[in-house]
Amino acid sequence: MIDYPAARAVALVAQTGSFDGAAAALGVTASAVSQRVRQIEERLGAVLIERGAPCRATPQGAALCRHMERVGLMERALFRELPGGDEAGPVTLSLAVNADSLATWALAALAPFSRAAGYLIHLTVEDETETAQALRAGRVLAAVTATSRPVQGCEVTPLGAMRYHATASPEFVQSHFPDGVTEAAMARAPASPLARRTRFNRIGCGCSSARRRAIRRISCPRRRVSSRLA
Image 1 (tube, helix red, strand yellow):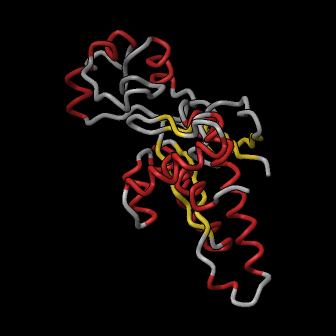
Image 2: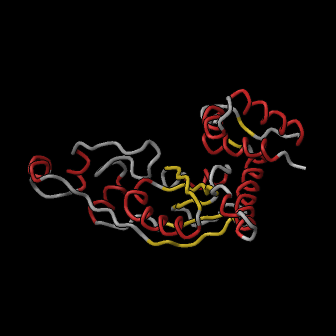
Image 3: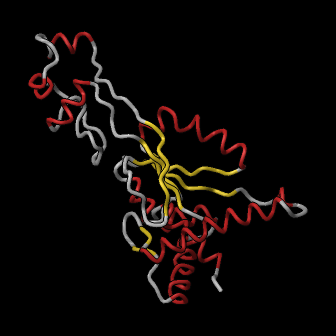
C-alpha cells in the first residue's frame, strides 16, 4: 500500500520545487517533509526527488505525482456522491503555461472551468518550448506548449495561434528606423531581453529568422495543450 500522506509530500516538493515550499503547503516543517519523502523512497526502493534548486521529480517520482493527481480527481468525484461530500477539500490541478498565453487568453478560459468543476488551478509559468518538460517531470498535469509531439502518456489538443507585432514609440522609430524597418536596422536597434530560454531571444532582433518573423508579422507556433491520460 502507498503511504498517501508521504506521496502527497513528494508531489508538493515536485510542484513547489523545494522542501520548504511543500512544508508551507502542508503546514509542517521542512524536516518533516524530508522524513516523509525519505520513508516512501525507502519503502518503494526508488529515489523520487532529485535534490537541488529547484528540486525535481525523478521518472519514478513523476509517475507517483501523476498518480496523486488522478487520486485527487477520483476522490473529488467520489465525495460528490457521498453525504457531506461538500466538505471535501478542493482539488488542485497543476498547469504549465507560457507568459504570453497567461497575459492574454488563458485566465479567461480557465476561470469558467475552475468555477464549474470546483478545481483550483496551480499555474507554473514557463516558456512555451519548456512547458512540456514540466509535464514530463511530473510537476504539472497539463501544459500549454508549442510542441506538437505529445509527452509519453499524454494526448495533444491544438488550441490555436498567437500573432506577434513589433511595436515602438514614434521617437524610437524616428531614431532607429529613419529609412524604414529593415532587417539591418532591426539588428542595430537596442532591445529588451526576454526570458532566458524564450524562443525569441530579443525583442525585434536576435537570430535572423526571428527578425524576419517580426518584420513580416508571421504567426508564432500554434499553441497546444498536452494533458495526462487518465
